[in-house]
Length: 420
Image (cartoon, rainbow, N blue to C red; front, side):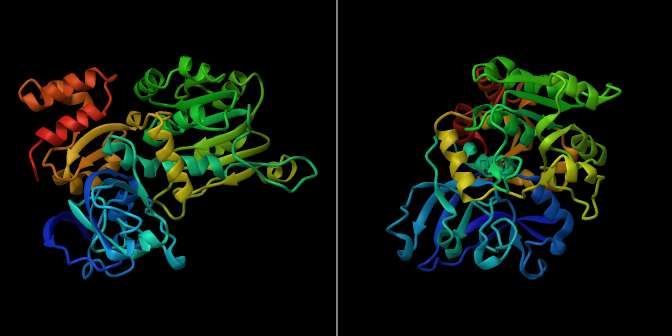
């Protein structure tokens, strides 16, 4: 079968190509990809090429299909897996396989599987590691967002706290505690606010900061203080740009107390050091942001590590249980991952978008792999709709869904957008 896919050959060398997939073996599965969400990790792969830790062979000789936040349908199931999976079944995937202690992952390490393709071959190790997951929600884009959401879920589960005289770690944020989310109105930060409100462990107060008022205002309109209050949570959005002493100001908002849990969503040295100063006794600092600079560092107060029991955690991705939790919460309507999406496009838009992802404002960039569409901001649908009836209809649909992407929009795009 022929597939169209974006493959990486080296640093910023991404090519949209058509090529033949081999016949599947008995322990493999042929799958159709419907949607993929572009991750900053793919941008880092493009920047680093062969130097990336998940690349396992010279890319110039063995190019790999990029993309790891994908969702689709199973087309043909090899005999080994016929009792567990069936043709036509919708699926999502956990790309962090942890197979035999390796870092191999779809989207980084394989010639025939990655999210930015029309059809792929799922290798046996994905099923062996229980990383091929049935997807039960009704919109493909949610399945693509289950992987980034799992990173958020995993970060919350990685938090820990102790009690005096005990070495037992209580996992998760402090129930009924105070939570600060710094630089947290980008796509992952939005997901983190949503999960803090609707997850199983709820704080009593969440303070969200950023220095971009337009992004803060958008976040506050989509994840409201009123919604948080329904769950007994006080949610406060703060622009710290012109505040001379943000630590003092945020502590004041927290009734004069420092914070039990602090998350950092941008790899910025002063922000990390501010987070350190915000920690209460037994406070846990989560460095969520993944830096591109391997030498990135910041000062940490080790006096407080010793006497105030401050601690630091960081996670890179979620595990399979985290992605299952994400899928279950989305299927039940407990999370709104659509707040993370600001742009949509077709497979043709992937190379340029991936290479320039750090320069494109907004949140998640959602790709429909069988379509030929320029990357377009949802906010620009109306303007483009003045001359293009396709975007006029998408603008009309978005207006019915708080300006967000939706199943209705997805269905219309899949039925009417030009094919790649």
